[in-house]
Image 1 (cartoon, rainbow, N blue to C red):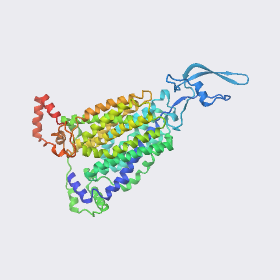
Image 2: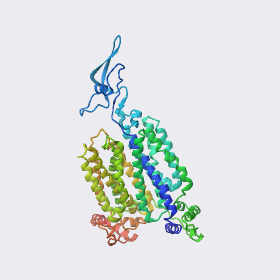
Image 3: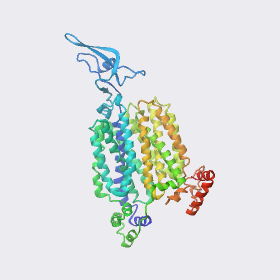
Image 4: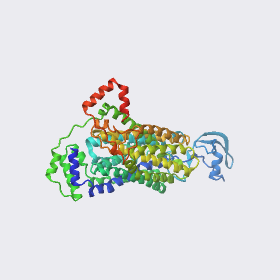
Length: 568
């Protein structure tokens, strides 16, 4: 069925005007605004420097700074306390009222004042989430990551089995607006966090479904290029966030602005048709044929003959295998677990860099802008490096660079500009490795579980990023986050060492091919664009051979394990 559809796509055009319109006027804008939608949250949850509000007497001649100096105690580091104030004794005279400030302290009684030099309003300043409620801002980031993980798990399944891609394009923006707008006005922590979680459910689908819809109608040579375009437009959207937040430093405005692109989503309903591959998988062949006819006309290929359409109508669908069948294949099973370790370490580290924008406290906006602009070269060239230098070499080199500069960052904590440069290199290396891994994961998974397996991979990564907000907590030392990143990167480095090189290999069509993918390619050999033809994948064993290998493993477990691991 897939071969027949690919032939029809070649006939109607898989790289024509229709595909270019989708890429530049559909996929590009969606990824741009997805970057804005995801990263404006970083400005919402900033907790600025704050201290207790102490009412100023009406007859005082002291300035605000002088009044703060005598009413707010200092910490051991010489900073003003954020949660304590000196007690005052009021004395009522015959003609005036006097105040005596004691040496005893108490928690803030009249609210807080805060530094508004950069932000006019954040979630913390609007809702008074300081001191005993100071961790609520980190909770927002954590529940957002948890929502992303949950949405990656079940919403793609809902799209694949029931709703399709086109309905999701309309449903997910509507859900985001419905849950985001109330969160701007509700300060009750439990309700606010619940709304944040529900709004975060749809974010992964807002990014992945448009990409899937486009990839399913383009030729294979375009797929890596489209992935690079997605990363570039997303990063530009992140950079745009810094400009908007600088001009409009109020979290309510940023949250409501993130809803505006979603209100335009119904326009795509009229111009973007359903994926013909999904329609064919559901037996809706007549609708699939109509869309292919439309693509052919837009691409200037004319109408497809009824004889070619008959290929679709006469093809029977195979029963889809279950995801749990992967447990029957030991090498594939272990390889997937290593992908989880590799991706988890990378995503936690990237979350720390992304959320730790206070590396330049004097200017949050410039800090994030510099970090995202540094990432652009990685977005633009990582697919070139992976294609010519090999996937494994690119990932290993990127992880080593990220680890070295994470260690270097611990010595740059008191040099803002130097720390921005060092952390920017870490982000560049992490982005390069993550984008390369974005290509590798589908190349390792067999066709029957490629989409669902990739969704679970994203779920695990989003779940691990729940840890990141707490690693950048202001209650922890500044260097702690970088030591944690270094530890996670070491785990990722060990995991990537055992991932086979996939450059030049065809995609595995079934579980047996995926099980033996990379056999004949030693893990100690650098395989790249210019020599991969010398390391062809060994012939995949037949089911009978596999049964014999399994029986042999039962009798000689140690020997079998060592020989299999050598090629996995």
